[in-house]
Length: 231
Image 1 (tube, one colour):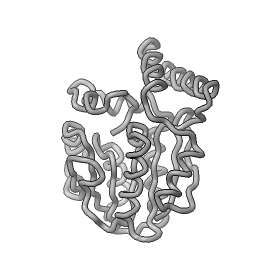
Image 2 (cartoon, rainbow, N blue to C red):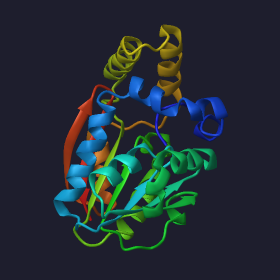
Image 3 (cartoon, rainbow, N blue to C red):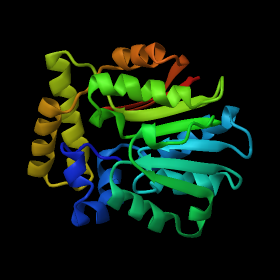
Image 4 (spheres, helix red, strand yellow):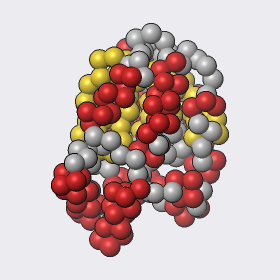
């Protein structure tokens, strides 16, 4: 699951939105393609060659495909609450689907593992703060000791003036990438008023509270941030 639309359940079950998913995400997230490559590299630092990787928010299948192409022996368990997005993931993977097991639901739906690594890209910014903490703990519980966890999503300073500045930068990037200016401004307004966003310091504190250690910021793309941490 990916781009920050406000009602993910409605959006990711809308056929037009699902079909436009990959293209829209590239227009909204700076360095989206390279971000996926970086995530795979960070996982590979500690995961074995035949790693079993948990992918939370796997709908669409974009990162699954990149990971599978970069690491021929990795296998995947993906979870996502949007059935239509899981269907898109299956289509995106093609023959690579033989190395993936997809589950309709949230992290609780995933097998207990233990997994060699986990990722969660462009998903956490949809999840309510209390539920986000529980989600991180459930991911941590399914990982082997020392296993890497990589997440990336919207996160920027939340003081009012800074918040407005970062949202304006989100709009500027979207418009520069070909998004209609009015649509970009409306999206930013809705994001600012409805999404449960956290600042980078709060994100790192939440990782620590969930039991992860050694959190490091590895990606910053305007309004988006990414961290690697360890179980």
